[in-house]
Length: 148
Image (cartoon, rainbow, N blue to C red; front, top):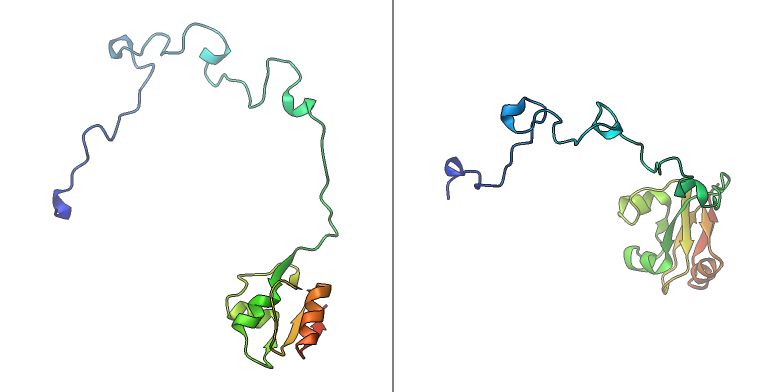
């Protein structure tokens, strides 16, 4: 096979139907739109969700929930991952987590969670800690520092 000999497979490309181009084309007169009515007219159609004047489904169903504008979106990191990626007495900060590709980005901050085992003493700086994570870090001989 050579690049200059490639050809389009027969039947893989289909020309679009050009409607309303005279009766000789076979798609003239009503242009395959039937006869009369809103859908036959230029630009005529009904919007999404329109049910002919009946109260539409999206308005019949009740609204639920709300967006809490004071809620912060923390990026979670488990202590088990810190055990794998960091050496003894190393400082773990949001910047070092980015450099080691543990997190791709963080919005409001980093939250350290307690899933996994931790045996190394690490100095961890993060925006928030779960209670179990703080206990595991301190039990291993490390320190925690909450960033604002």
